[in-house]
Image (cartoon, rainbow, N blue to C red; front, side, top):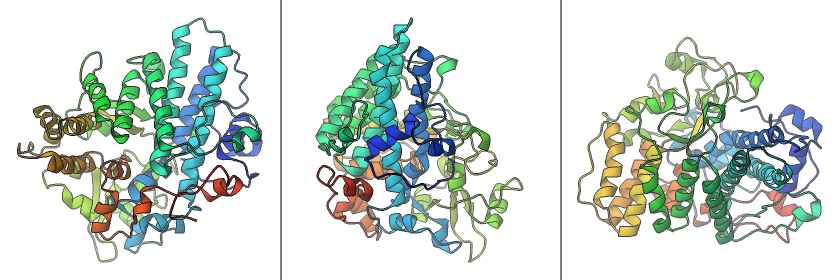
Length: 491
């Protein structure tokens, strides 16, 4: 991603702030960090304008990807910082995540809030204004609306899991008075809005896209995300039929033959939805995760990555913990692919660098073109096993089969058929950890399984029960204290 550029703005609610950015009113900011093909100064007169507006919503998903990585991995037993093993000092906001000392002024939580509301604002604008655009192809018009609703649901789903009930705006906010009137909705109301958006998207999105629209949201993506929403909202009976449908025609998703194949190319047969990136600093569309995970020490970088390593560009902000690394067996194909292990001397010992997002040396910060997978078929199979276990109160043959497909691809044995409901659920959490490591699931999974505090406390993380929700950004509470209240445990 592009480097963060700090600017001062008038204190306004995030949803209006996002509209301000997207409308072109803050020209200086837009020139520095644009939503490159977004709804900036769009007239909304023709289908091309609508298409550019839809692409702007996807851009908003790009903008928050590094913050998403930090909040879902760096706050768990999956990741530590290279900084914490003596090579550098972690920044204050990252140290807050490491030690569960974060406050309402944490930059990464503020970023995810603002980025997601920027996406929501862009989606609202498109959904409201597209009705006034004449389309010769009404199916394409419906598709654009479906994409906007899918992405709006994605943003709200992340927000409700991180923060609990959040302000829900489903129409374009044009005036400050509208923004200040928005209060926090209940979690139930947020989930209802998400479910409705995804249900609408299902009716309007195609099963597949042609090469022109490759990488955009599909019916399968909406179905997989809705299933995850239902599992999180404790409605496994609603998730189960959706997940079963994804394993059958007309859907053609499949596990790639080898685990590395999932990441060796973009938009593979296993991928259901991924955020698209384009390499090169000049595009301003590069994926910053390769830099985020690379070593921040040139010696380590050259030793591990080879002569092509771009020294000095690494962040070293998320290194796999030994706890995660050691949970893979020696024969597990995922261990050798996921990690570049550095074992040299006392100063630089025990580094398990993440290489899932590393293909070629990047041209610079934010310069990689690896897409980021949000939903893939292995995730669907593991969710299918979860839904079956929940609805049957114990693992069924179909649940075992779903898990075994993932395990056998990783070159590890099938599960023994002697697990009850609780032990199978525990096993599923571990299966998800090993299969989906550093794909931004761990914090969400621990929370959905009701194990966030228990698991991290057992590993000496200073987590408290109130940490199952993050604090709302202080700036949002301060400017609208009547309608925007802080979560318990935070000032």
